[in-house]
Image (cartoon, rainbow, N blue to C red; front, side, top):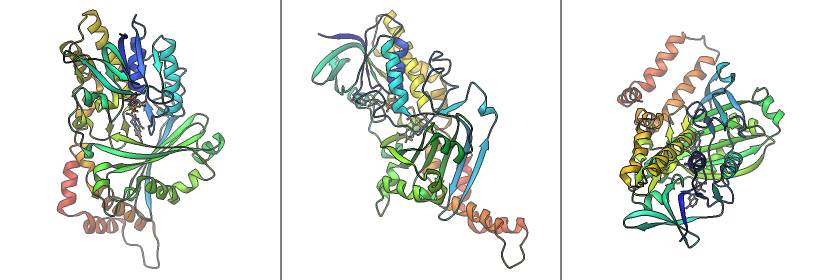
Length: 429
Ligand SMILES: Cc1cc2nc3c(=O)[nH]c(=O)nc-3n(C[C@H](O)[C@H](O)[C@H](O)COP(=O)(O)OP(=O)(O)OC[C@H]3O[C@@H](n4cnc5c(N)ncnc54)[C@H](O)[C@@H]3O)c2cc1C
């Protein structure tokens, strides 16, 4: 009978972080990954914020293959035929240690997988885990390629639709409203073109989020991140909203339409699509969290529901890394006590609850219901872009006072019970 100390299912950020933090101990660790290599199947927007995880992995960041550090932040509200953008360009974001970076997961995870393997863990690609092994009512291992592999503890790091958390009975039914679906392209462009087009110098980068009519009234939005020699461009739409939409829409077609918008067209002109991906993304935050531990099992990263849309920022990668580090801490403690029962492993939940992950999930627990409001994606962008357009437009008639234009627009479009309710729900986020 093959027996490991720890088996980790999934070589994404959460699984690799768990292995990385355990590999210094005298442990036999196996990371089973179904993709051809770590990162081959992993999708993010994406941008990673380092401050929450910098000290957890002090040796990692200096040589990590990250893309550009973000110095320009843009938020664009899109109406049918116009858009309004708010921009932040900050010197603070241009000072080392940099606050956030764009990232390509196929590159980063592969490198991280090599680091974990150098530390002595076995990272096995092309190895799909199909089931868990149970003994005396506790998780005792995994089944991969028909082989049973036993372990003191199994870590479910298998991402957003975690089969492992489900098999272990830790997750209740998944609700479509807690998830969104994304389509993303990585579009290659010469480095200099990116720097000229986006007004960047050296390794500086830009992050831009879009919301409004591009999702046709459905919860979601678009994103654009500049990498060193490519652009990550994508669109996210809530699954429940998509299921209810009539006539039916395809997300990849919505991405094509987004690419044809004049705001985007010029930015990607001449680029070659190097990668296309579709992936599910967590929107449910704390509402989508399963039980985090059981006898012989822990759940980390997206598998544990650790993802959050904070309207202006999207979070998940730091949660994956930090939860992996916490799982490793709980496993080391369980090992000292030679006790891998649920009671012993519950220490992991305690660590999570005391951490920024749980605190942020709690703080932003009302964001989902706020975002379910279609007015956010049609009425408000139309009104604000329309108002801005009116203020900027000069016609044959004498121009009225600014205050008159503003009050007329706002009174005419926004003074009703629905929008007043929205103002109150805004106060809850
Ligand atoms: C479109 C999009 C945009 C996003 N943007 C951002 C962003 O800008 N910033 C941010 O912080 N987060 C973002 N996120 C969220 C972030 O990408 C995730 O939170 C993060 O990838 C979670 O990491 P993970 O390791 O938990 O899961 P994953 O990265 O999904 O890794 C899971 C791994 O498990 C493997 N696996 C699954 N099942 C099995 C099995 N049965 N056997 C073996 N292996 C298996 C998979 O192949 C994969 O390698 C975004 C997500 C999406 C989809």
